[in-house]
Image (cartoon, rainbow, N blue to C red):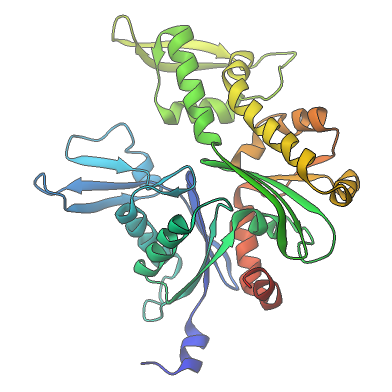
Length: 344
C-alpha cells in the first residue's frame, strides 16, 4: 500500500455530473476534463448475456439508431437515475479513466451529483456504480446545490437562493439557505421529454418518422418557449409513414413551440408551485435575488422570458448552464469548507 502522503500528492479527486443526457467529469485543481453523452455501445457475444464495450460517449451516440443486430447503443440512465447498472458502471469507468489519465495507480475520491428526489435505493446504485468504476471513496451531492455553487450563488449564507435545474431526465426546483435545501421538488422529465414531444408532433402532423438525434437538433436549433413574430424555418428528413420512403419537409419555430407546449407547461407549473409553497420570508428574498436557470434546457429560447411572465420574479440563466452541476461539485472539492458543510 502506498503511504498516505504519496497518495494525497499524486491523486486527483473528481467531481461527476452523472446526467441522463450527458456525463461531465471535473478534476480537482484542473477544471472540466470530460463532457460526453451518457451513451455506451456494446456488442453481444454470441447471443449470450455477456457484452463487450465498443464505444462510450460521442462515438457511441453516433451509433444510436444505426447499429446492426448484435450491437446495442444503451443509455444507462433514465429520468436521472441508473436504469442499466452494468452499462452505467462501464461508462463511468471509461470516463473516469479518461479524466484520470496518467494516474491509474491512485484510486480517486469522487463526488457525484444526483437528483435531489431520488430514493435511497437509487442513491445506493449510484454509489456502488462509482465504486465499481474505480473510486476509493464516493460522496453524493444534490444536483441543485451543486448547480447553485456552479452559478456562484451564496448557498452557505442565510439568504434565499433558488435554482431550477432542467436536464435531460429531470426538472429540479430547489430553494436553498445555510447550505441546505429548504424546499425541493423534482419531476421526472426534461430535455428528453421535449425530444419525444417533437418526434410525436412530426409523426402526427406530417406523417414523418424522425430519430431522437434529429428531434434534439430541432429543439436546439429552432425550439422556442414563446411564439416568434418572425418564424424560423428548418428542413428535416425522415421516413414517410404512408410510403415508407425517405422524405424531407420544412417546419417552422411556431410548430416546434406547439410541440413543446406540454413539457414546457410542466416546467412552468413546477416553478409556480414551488413559489406558492416556500416560506414567506424566503419569498421576499426572491423579489430581489430572482431565480437562476441551469441545465441544458435553460438554453431553450425564451424559456426565461416565459417564466418571468408567469411568475413576475426576475429570471436569469447561469453563465454556463450545461456545466453548472459539474463546476459546482468541482468548486466544492477545491474549497474544503464548502464541501464540509454541504456533505454533513
